[in-house]
Image (cartoon, rainbow, N blue to C red; front, side, top):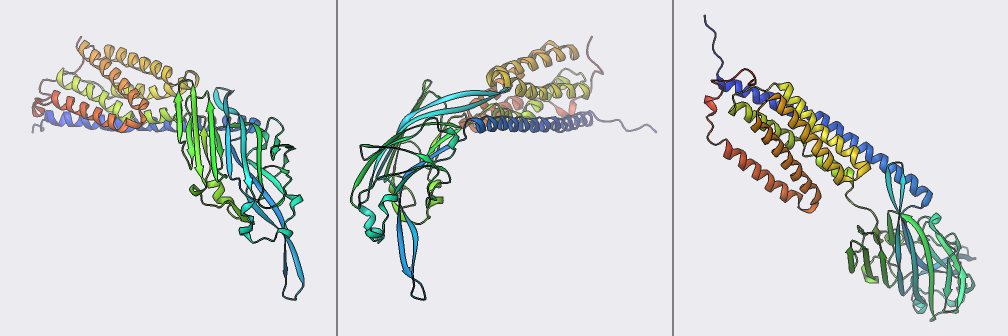
Length: 446
C-alpha cells in the first residue's frame, strides 16, 4: 500500500518549528553573556572600591552643629540630689557652602575610577536667642565647654588642617572626633568655641579641602542652607532629597545652586539629647560625579534585544527558502545565530578598552561582514546577500539609537517594531502558503 505523501505545508511548518527551537536555543549563550556582563561590572565596582579606600569614599558634609553642655539636677526617690550632663544641640541660622569640585581620574588596571577634590568655603552664623525655649537654666549651662562639630563621612579625605574663624576674629583649629555628647554624626571634627551667653550672634567661616569619590553630599542644617558648586565634570547626576534650584550643564562642566529652608526638613533648629540623627541623614543632597549609563549598562540593554536580531535574521533566511525555492540547513541557521551572539561578547570586551561607541561600531561592522561573507558562500544568491547586509546594518543602527536615547527607548522601540511588522506583512501579503514547496530544490544552485 502506498504511504501517505507529506504535504508541502507540513514541510514549511516543520521548518518554522525548527527555526523557533533554534531561536530558543540561542537564548542560552545570550544568558551566559549577561552573566559575564554582571561579572565584569562587579570587578569594575571592586576596582573602584579599592581605589576609593586609598583616596576617600563618598563624602557627606554635615554641620557645623553647636553643642552646649549643661548640668541637669533632680532629686531621686530618696530625696537625694542627682546630677548628670546633658547637651543642647543648636543648628546655624544661616549656612552657606561655596566652592569647586575638581574631578580626578584614576585607573586600576583597565577600569576607570572617578574621584574628586573639593575646595569649599563654609560661612554662616549661630544665634543663641532661642535657648530660652528649651527651659534650661542659664546658670546650669557650662559655657566654657561649648564646642562646634563638623560631620564628615571619611576623615582620610581631609587635605589641610581646618582653621575656624569664629565671631569674626578668633582663629581656632579643629581636632579629630565628634566630641563628647555629639551623636548626630558618626565621624567628624570638633573645636571648642568661646560663647558669651544667650542672645548673642556668632558668625563663623572656614575653608575645607576634601577628597572623595562618587558623590559629594551636604546636610541642610541651617535655618536657610545655600550650596553653590561648580566643576569641569560635564555629566553630573544630582542626587538626594533636594534638587538644585538653579543649574547649568555644558560640555565645559556644570554649575548648580541649592536653597533649602528649615521648613523643608523633619527636624528643628535646636533640641536636647541625641534625637533626630536618622532624620538628619535622610535630608542629604548633592551631586554624583559619574555617568549613570556606563558600558556595562548599555551592553546589558543591548543583550535584551538579542531575540529580535536572531528572529529577524532567521526570517530573512526563511524568506529566501520560500521565495527562491532553496533549502537552508539548520546548522547554517545555528552558525549565523552564534555569530549574532558573538556581537555582544565583542561589544563587552572592546568597550572596556575603547569606550562604548568605537566598540559598538567595530563589533557591528565585524559581525555584519562575517555573516554577509558566510551567506554569500552558503546561499550564493546576490539578492539574499544584499538584503542580509542591509537588514543587519539597519538593525545595528536602530539598536544604537535605542541605546543612546534611554528616555525615549520605549517609544522608538515600539515604533520600530511596528514598522518592521508592517514591512513583513506587506511583503508576505500575497504568498499562497498552501502552495509552498511544490517545486522545492534540494540544494543551492550551482
